[in-house]
Image 1 (cartoon, helix red, strand yellow):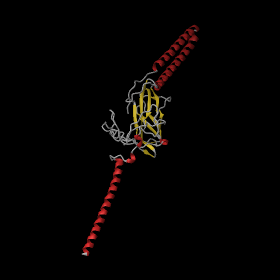
Image 2 (spheres, rainbow, N blue to C red):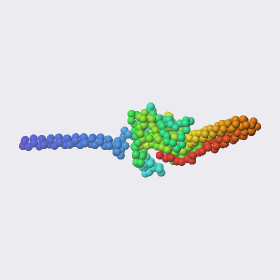
Image 3 (cartoon, one colour):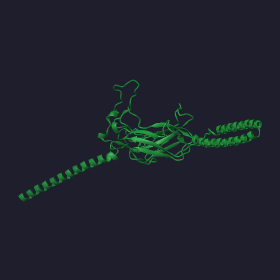
Image 4 (cartoon, helix red, strand yellow):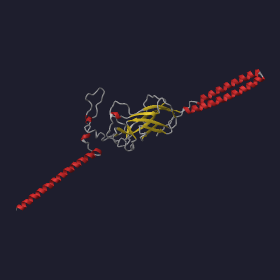
Length: 334
């Protein structure tokens, strides 16, 4: 009897230990699952993690608001459903307009803000020759250039990222025709451009970038601007409102006159040389006429002088007619 009682106690104890072990394993599995879920949520989960909530979005800015300032939209969940029911951007360039729910991403420090300057062409510099290939040159600071995602299906589809504290991405150059003046007063049509190029490479590795305008541009007045962007093509985001521009614009002139002027000058020089030869011949004739008859010499000299004057006037008239030809404009798109 005593033996059976001891055996029952032992079996009960073993069962309790086994149950505790199973419970511990279950607890460990739950913890592991929670950790895995947290990691998955960071990249592809549908849950907003508590440590990702932007508390500033809950404020409308009414505290200490200044005259003329507007109240902000508010959200307690980072506007995660802001685009619900709207046409989503979804990685596409939606020409009819869309809503993009992707977060803005990493923003650089104030000391790492992006800056650009166009070094060629320049306003007030030498004219660019019409219909002649040239390079647009840009120098950038605080920018890791050379990263360019597929704009057909990843447009605005990922956040801005940093490398070494600097924005990772690429820049663009866009050229627009200003019409008959370098200083128009009407804003240009943003859908129209004479040249556009995304610069996908890293350039010289020191911020120097360039884009080749193959075939050049027609004669006219132009504006060229840079557009720095993150890898997924959104314009770069900076940490403070009061700052210098991240991009640059300059105006320049494309001229068709220099080569034609060179031809006119050569023609005029040749005509002048011919006139000089005529004058020499006239002088020789005058010398012969002097030996024969002084009266005839005077008449011949007067005649030769009048002929030379006529030749010179004709030369000037030809030079005036050859200059000033203007080339009709055409659209050049890259």
